[in-house]
Image (spheres, rainbow, N blue to C red):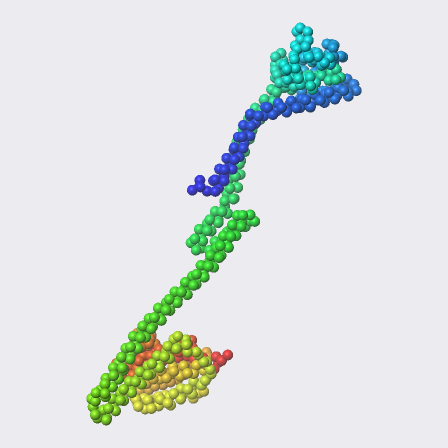
Amino acid sequence: MFKHSIRYKMTAILITIIGSVLFLTWILNTTFAERYYIASEKTSIISSYEKVKTLLHSADSSIELAESLEQITISNNVKMMVVYSEDATSMNQEVIFSNMAGGTSVYEQILSYLNYVRSEISQDTDLSGDSGTPHWSNASMPEELKTLVKKGYFVTQMKDKRGGQNGIYLFGFTDDDYLVAMRVSIEGIRTSIKISSHFMAYISLIAVLIGICAISIYAYSFTKPIKQMADVANRMTELDFDAVVTYKTDDEIGELGRSINKLSETLESTIGDLKTANLELQQDIQKKEEIDNMRKEFLSHVSHELKTPIAIIQGYAEGLKDGVTDDKESMDYYCDVILDESKKMNQMVRKLLTLNQLEFGTAPLTIARFDLAQMIHNKISASQILFTGKDVKMIFEEKGPVYVWADEFMVEEVFVNYMTNAINHVADQGVIKVWFEKRDGIVRTNVFNQGKPIPEEELDKLWIKFYKVDKARTREYGGNGIGLSIVAAAMRAHGKDFGVKNVEDGVVFYFDLDGESSEK
């Protein structure tokens, strides 16, 4: 894993480059340094010769000349002999300056020969002499001699057999009858090159070691933000968008970090939107399934509830058509049964339509202030015949007015269903009682009927459509299990509490409304 990391690759590449450059430098130094130094020394010795020529021409005294020549030899690290020859044809020579320790006679002989060459040049000959004196044609003339003839000096590299000095030599003559011999030792050059090569090898090794440390640190600092970005990206793949890139610079890596942070924010927002949309879709699907189940349940219950009255109506109608009886009283009974069952079917259909509007929100609420006590008094008075018929005592002692804020039509529907339910389930010669409870701006209406308690496990089921605790008794008074469902839907539309509870000798149904103090 480490070998495939950018840090490892960067360190390896940079170390390879540095090592290669240092090794190539060492090779070049070992191979070409001597040639470069020799060429440089040849240029330097020629420059020194030109300075000597200038001094020989312009010096005012022999002392000044000697001091100046000494200064040149010191500053340029050369050995030098300057000889004065009075005329070109004379072999008599006077040594003006010399700091050559060994082989002086050799240099003097060379200078004598230079004097001879100078004389021949001055006589414009082909450089041929007497016996014992070398002579050449222009074609066979050595390069050094050609340079001597052309420039007045020549430079060569040789070893002095007597003195054992291996060096660069310059021999020349001037127009002022001076002969010059100069030498620069190249043994020191070779020693310096050898020392330099060894020193460079050590320096290269140290440079590589330091480079490894420096590049490792740099590579770590360079790859650290990249690794952090990789960690952030990995956390993003796990939908963890809390991690952010903290590396903030103005370079490309900083720009990449900002792009990753922006991508994280965008992905988080997008995924949040997708989750919201998915949740809404799931809710829509669940709601659709619930509606579909409600539809199926509704059709099942409606079919069941309508099946009996339709069968009764059909049976009595067929009996009348077939002339089962000619007795007017019997025929009237048949017609009364048909009308009664039709009335029950009509009531059930009306209640179902009301319940459907409430459950699906198609029945808008009209909130208004009205006198709840007066509305209940009116409904009790209109139903007085029902209390008398069942020998039931109805108690409602609230004098009013009791003002509430609600949809009066829906509240009337709620109370009528509670009162009807109480009439249908009250004990023979029992008591039905209605009263109010007021607290914190809420008016609670309680409807009590004396009779048998409802089983505790059945209490929460009373609000389900078509649910009947005692199906036989419900059928007896024509109930269809829709009334309390209407109550639940109406109170949920108002956002208020409702319910039922068993008490000591009966059952109490209740519902809450905003009272007078709730007016805004």
